[in-house]
Image (cartoon, rainbow, N blue to C red):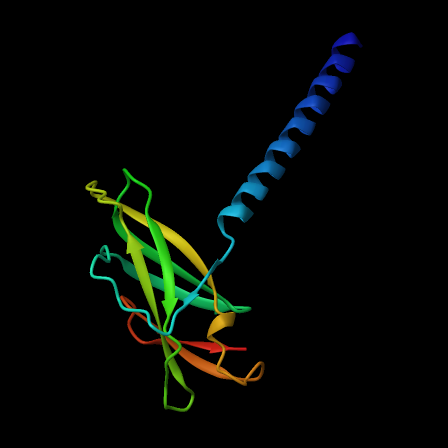
Length: 150
């Protein structure tokens, strides 16, 4: 009987500890996937020091652009930023481009790294069209356009 009670208490304590750990892991994951803001700059010029990368997947859901990128590295932190120069092509639907800037921090390692990035597209909405509209989004290192319906 003593062993049964001891076992039940031990399992209860372990169970509580596991739930707490899982909650912390969920919070950490949510924080790392918060979307970054796109930098809107009418005078933006593409930098010459853009480190190499490839966009292997792209999707848009609820104003959030999610892209999967691969690049060589693994020894230093890499940073990605997105820029929009406020230029729309005269087409139906209009087309706009995002420049993805990869800052590799001179990482000389050769490990193939895959990373998911998220960007908020609301600043790219066509002027005067707050809803019920479509813009085709193009990006450097991505073939074709992706449809942004809002």
